[in-house]
Image 1 (cartoon, rainbow, N blue to C red):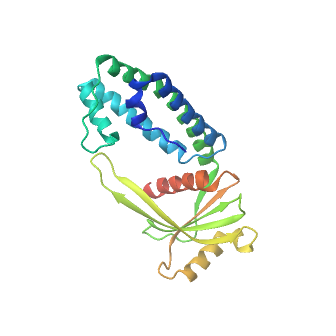
Image 2 (cartoon, helix red, strand yellow):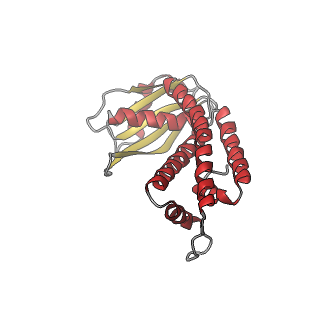
Image 3 (cartoon, rainbow, N blue to C red):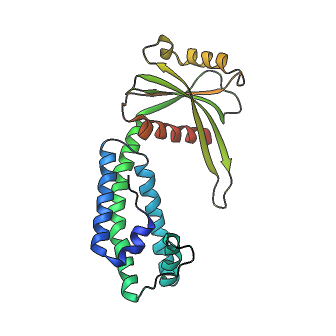
Length: 237
C-alpha cells in the first residue's frame, strides 16, 4: 500500500488539487483495509504521518517557515547535494493550508482504526498460566488463530530502553509451535505449558500467558499486534 509521507505535503505547493486527490486516494486505501478489520500497518502509518505533520506545523509557527520546509524537503531531493527549493510567500501559505486541510481527514481515518483497536482489545482476554516466576520479561504466550484453526505459540522477550522523555518498551516474539485447535491439549493451557517446558528446557518455569478470543479477525494484521500490546501493558504494570 502506498503510504503518506512528508514529501506528499511539502510538494503540495506545485499542485494543490493533485495533492488533495493523492491524499484522499491513499486514505481510501487505508479505510478499505480498516473496513476489512486489518489494523496494521494502516493505523501505525496514519498515526506516524499525523505526528510528523503536527510537528511540522509547530515548527513552522515557531521558526522561519521557509527554513523549516527547505530543511525537511532536503530528505526528498534526488541529488545528495542539490540546492533546496525556493518557496515564495504564496507557496508557503499553500503548503500550510494544505496540511491544515489534511489533518482532519487523517484524524478521521485514525478514529476508525482506534475504534477497531478498542473493540479487539476488549474482546481479547489474557491470563497467566501456572506458577509465575519473579522475572516475567521472557517466556511464552499462546494465542488462537481462529481463521486457520491453529493455536500459535510464541516465545517473547521484552526489553526496556531509556529515552529522555520516558522509558520505551519493545517486545520481540518468535513463533515456536503450531497446534491444531482440534487437538485435545489446546483445551488446557496448563498442558500446553507442560509441553513447552519439556520441549524447551532452557526456561524451566517460564512466564506463560494464554490469550482467549472469539474474534476471527485477520491474525497478523490485527489479532497478534493487539495481543502483543496487551501483553506489554501487563508486563509494564
